[in-house]
Structure formats: C-alpha cells, structure tokens
Image: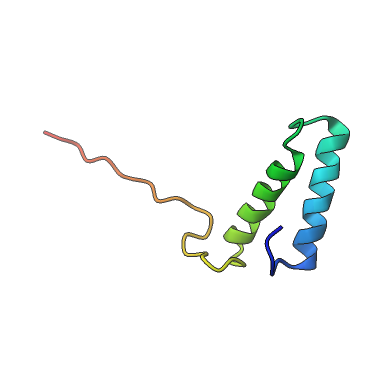
Length: 66
C-alpha cells in the first residue's frame, strides 16, 4: 500500500489479499489485485493526491455526421 493510506484502507487491503489467497483467486497476483482495488476506492473517495477524475474516466461523445 502507498504511504499515507489510512489504517482502514490497510485493513481492507489485508482482508482482500487473504480472501483471494483462501479462495485461490488470481493465483500469484493476489497482492497486486487487492492493491488495485483499494487504490481505485481511495481515488474515487478523493483520498489520493491526484484525485482530479474521482474514479471516472472521461467518455468521448461521438457526433453524427450528415
């Protein structure tokens, strides 16, 4: 987990990692996947340094051509 993350996020990360190992999900990548999930949640909640997008990507709109 990145430095500066809250104890709540640390617990979430540990819980996800052990759950993935127990269920044999994402073999060999449990830690990576758990970190990605927690970081995505942190970004969406505005807890990160660069939380401009708040977890959403800009969607391009297509215009109709006549």
